[in-house]
Length: 145
Image 1 (cartoon, one colour):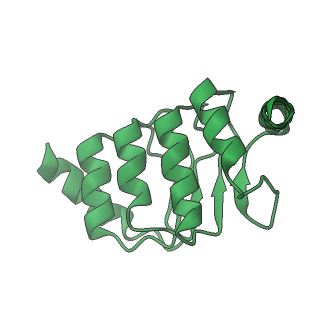
Image 2 (cartoon, one colour):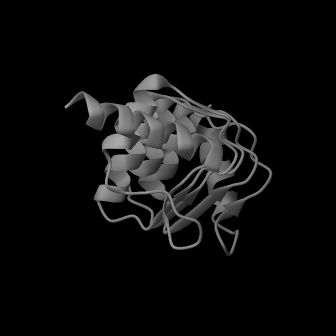
């Protein structure tokens, strides 16, 4: 299994802009291998809809400058923590334009982060509808204080 993953990863290295268009799933072990072996400055997984929290943590480990997961559907608290941590370590942008939902824990974690949503300039980029949910949560929290 790991050998198969490794040869696939070696083929991905050929992609000049590090865009992995056709990959629809990525196992934890493949993500781990990828994080150890691959110099990732800009990474885009165009078709990955689901990633485990563990796989996301592995992908964030080498600190890519830009990470684009436009097909990712949902975000857990642990994944949000990994992304916020990556931004705090110096990543410029994480693009999650396809998100359909955020867990309550993810909303809370993102609302505490100083890395606001933006469009082209980087930061954590999530759909406007979800940005609104995070902003509303922040407002409620500040009223509680």
